[in-house]
Image (cartoon, rainbow, N blue to C red; front, top):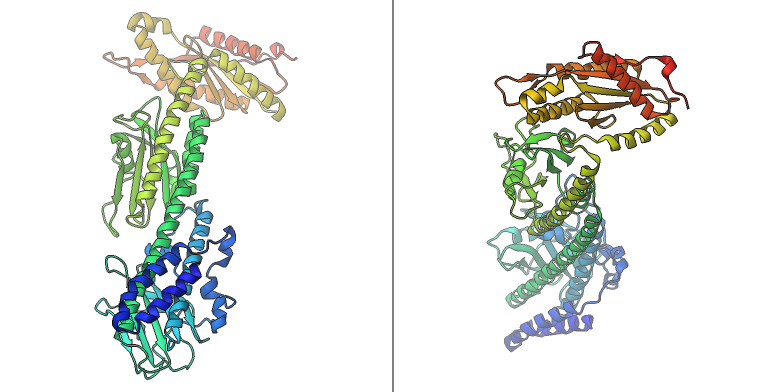
Length: 610
């Protein structure tokens, strides 16, 4: 059906070219061409194998009219619909959705090539003096034309011919003041770069292809071996055909773009389901990162999160792309003068373009970060668990080396994922908070007595398999009762929180264990340590606490000391409760020996063997 409509369109155009009263047929020809496009044959899913079949493969239907191609300079890659209507951009990441997107664009290009080829064939039948018809598209935003599709009686045509400014006759179309070319007595074909042989072209007519705003989109070129083969009426009719070609190409672009956007929202739906299944905050971070990396291009992407225990501070949870190793886990406060931190602070989307070669650098996190002047566009999306919150809980930052990089569609994708992630993040935090109430001490955030024993059992089984030691420390605050009696329990709470924080700073947070054992007592378990390591760490903790000044809102800071008892658990020693008792006995001796000291239990005959 589509082919029949194209032929009808060509016949009507042929009659219109006769002039006179037949010009009224032009609108009908355009309607027929449009109907042919709408009824074009749909390609199967495997159509991607047919990419550029019409314009680059000598086994296509074009062979029937002698189109055998030979590559000769100057040529370029054939512009696909993305480069015709947009700049083709390359970012640091390679989205996992890129392959599917490329397939969709390939199908759209193939269908457009077929449709334009059918139209050119019909037009050639109606113009018997014609030798070659070619459609050129603008090379992105460059001032150059590339031959996209053609029909010819010659084997001399150079596919993908690149025509730049001041490079032959056709290049005059690039001049905005030129409305058409019409030559009827050419001396030679040397200025026609899309030809490689010596067949003498005598006549040529070319008309620009404009968009609706009269911006140059490409050119329709027709030549003949006969002199004065075309006149003004043919040129005028070709202008109408050029409008049809623009409509075909734009509709193909818009259809492919809309289909891709639908697919991306479908992918987003699957991520939403994954979000709702997760009850772990770290998994929420991971899902956000994987979705953005897989679907939105960038040169640098960061995810920032506020500390749930101190909402004035936060850190960069993850970073990918330019200088990522310098940003991962970087800490910040809401007082830092960084544009992404500002998005968090104000719970507001921030978008910035940075001028090339600018001397003043705009910090992303804080003023100490490495300055990267190549990143020209930033889009920061805050995520808040409460809709009208003054301060956001998370922020996603995307940066590109290309100004005005992110389209409205990509921003909408990010807004949608931010809304879903905020809800999932709130659920995960509430779930973890419930777990924390059962497993952690509410004052210090350290694990509690029961959880300590569970973790010690787990670590002891691993230590037996790997033949490693565990160093156990029991510590007690010296004269803590007098602190409560003299300054009150709020002051005592401040001391306990300060000591817990100091202990955390002196151990390996990802490996070792620290717990509030009860009241003013703390337990530390050093995983995979030596006798020297156990004693040195215990002494380091004792000194750090001794040097610390505790602000209890009195006229002067309070000084506190601790006593520490330590016991080294060897792989063959299996009773961890007994190990804690040994450390407690060493603590008792440290306190009886004058306090503020470390005592390591070393009585061999007391070692319990199972």
